[in-house]
Length: 426
Image (cartoon, rainbow, N blue to C red; front, side, top):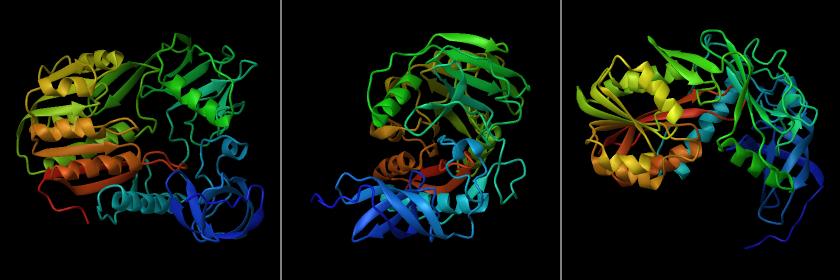
């Protein structure tokens, strides 16, 4: 049923009662849902409706805070205060942010995960995890736009480049004194584990005319394209370490943004496999495995590991990192094309992109009959949907843990251990 009410531009008082996925809080007025950014649950606000398409919901922005929540602080990121879409949770303490993320994950697991119950916490992966204010300086890599004057800057909501680099998440020295680049290009800036900074320009792609939503879609599409690269500073090859192994990856290639994330996830995956009840596995699959940072953890319980990754540069870096271990095999192809030809696994680890593993990959994994699966999810909604797909094959989570891998933002990651026939996580 289409609602014909339209509140575009209206200003009114509203109390938001719960967080929603995507960095919003939810309020209600006259039976309609109102999504408000930069709010905290329980706050009484004066808001103005910024987008209303006449449906059962609309979007609003804060005009005035009447009663602030206890977790609210002054915005910690000046770039976000200037209109950049970077640190959209920098107006709250780290404790408040993690509580909201835990509520969001529990809600998504219940609604999209097939009724999975979860009442855990979102864990900090900061070097000093007891900090309750905000974690700054955690980001070791950033992807920036370049404006018409050749100045690297950050993207506002909607895709436009704002010529500011004053982001509280950036590690010390990451974005200081960046060189100019070609207008319309993008710049990847990396501060690697050796302490070296690399600046790589990605050639621009043609942009069609369109509104804010069209520009945002074009920006996301361009991020996935193979682009001509020019090294502006550093060697262009980043050195990343997990445990006693080092990966030499092109600086523009994928690595975790949080400086502690790769090592933290490797430890968690190793611990989950050790606790899975699989004493020793003959074969393990590491799907969407990149250069294999999780394969190293798998080797603690697995005789051989097959890493599947479509990015050939990541595969080359992984093969070099594991040159001394002939039991780690790399397959440079898409997961859905390869798994049918791999030896049957005892354990599977998969770390898909934000779109999730998807029904086809989950079906293929379950058909192979592993005794344990560890699923790493960088988007909680698709993570929950993947877990629901696993549940239809009888694979249930025995452990679910959430991680604050993107402090001062609404993003976070979750990792689940699933075994066949297990009782659902409570």
